[in-house]
Amino acid sequence: MKLELGKIHIHDVKFGEKTEIRSGVLYVNADELRELVLRDDRLIDCHVELAHPGESVRITPVKDVIEPRLKVEGPGVVFPGVMGKVTEVGHGKTYCMDGLCVVTVGKIVGFQEGVIDMSGPAAEYCPFSKTQNVCVVIEPKEGLETHVYESAGRMAGLSAATYLAKALKDQTPDETEVFETKPLLEQAAQYPDLPRVGYIHMLQSQGLLHDTYYYGVDAKQIVPTIMYPEEIFDGAIISGNCVAPCDKVTTYHHLHNPVIEDLFRQHGKTVNFMGVILTNENVFLMDKERHSDMTSKLCEYLGLEGVLLTEEGYGNPDTDLMMNCKKTTQRGTKVVIITDEFPGRDGKSYSLADVCKEADTMISCGNGNVVIHFPAMDRLIGTQDFIEMQIGGWVGCKNEDGSFDAEIQIIIASTIANGFNKLCARGY
Image 1 (cartoon, rainbow, N blue to C red):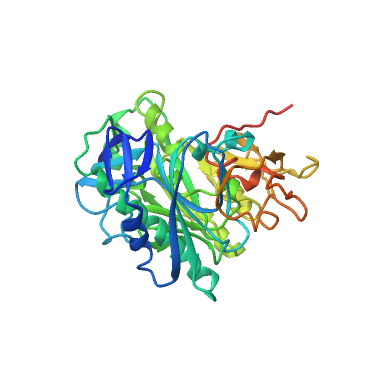
Image 2 (cartoon, helix red, strand yellow):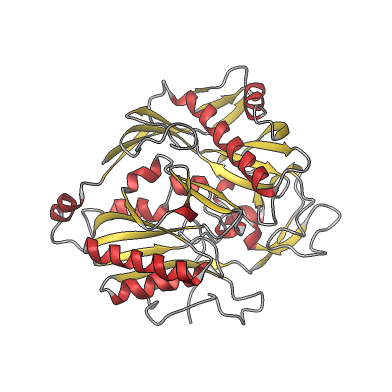
């Protein structure tokens, strides 16, 4: 499978009469975008706001972040099974708006939507403080069940990203990256002297509002499977969950999975990247045992010598993480775990809820319990009404001037457990 990803660099975003890209600037017709979103009768209002790096702007509660992408050659559409028919993607040509994101914002569904600050101390923890952001702020009908509201918010963001992506059609990429993975036996034979390495990609799927979608199917319904990594770059996986903001894998992070991107950079140099094993995170022990058995078996069957292993969330998913590590190691494949830590504000608790002796090689993405000060901002996109309820906040943490103190886990992607952040932990 071969995919050409053309990047059109976006260095600014403005409102305009026509949605188009001119000289690296995206112009957005806000009325058209608003009308599109409000075709969903579960929503009663929507407004569009823009946020630029360095501005005194706070965005919260954030539901999802999406990079607009467009298939320009090859079958299917980006986000297959959701924004179009179920057609295999990951090959042909796709264009993306490099440096721009759609951010969906609205009243909280549960308590796990987070914060993006475009400037100040919290901005240093969040990748989306450096992107041009088109914020779609939604208002649901009264009385919607939480999972219905989540679905409406998810579709609002995907619809907005798909609408903006049409502006990519006649653009010339500023740069192009080519990704290629051959069928299994050909791939193994291509670099016979390099170690065969894969990636175990754990998807959040632990109950209502903890959903991830694979070709439009809720990951709770899948069993471990093998996929070409290129499929992920075309939107085969999208976010639909409300896990802790700090390690929430947004749809943007699936499109830009750093483990896959780095493995491709090393492919043919230090490793032979064989592909992705997709699995989920389960609620019941029986399902955890079943799926970790299948995952480790696939590693053995593919003849992998090493794998990188990531999770989404913390606490309960740590058991899935350790089961996958333990069984895969016992079958003869070396495992490197990438995760984040939650040792409590005093640092006296265990960093992970579960552990096994086989987990002897780990990369930390930082401590989500660190407390920082969030200064008041000149402009607020969304509402701060829920700060004390959101993960990382607490009753009394908010001040009258709009500032507050909170753990960094309230920040979107601050300690995301796949390495798309700036933090790490040092052992002593």
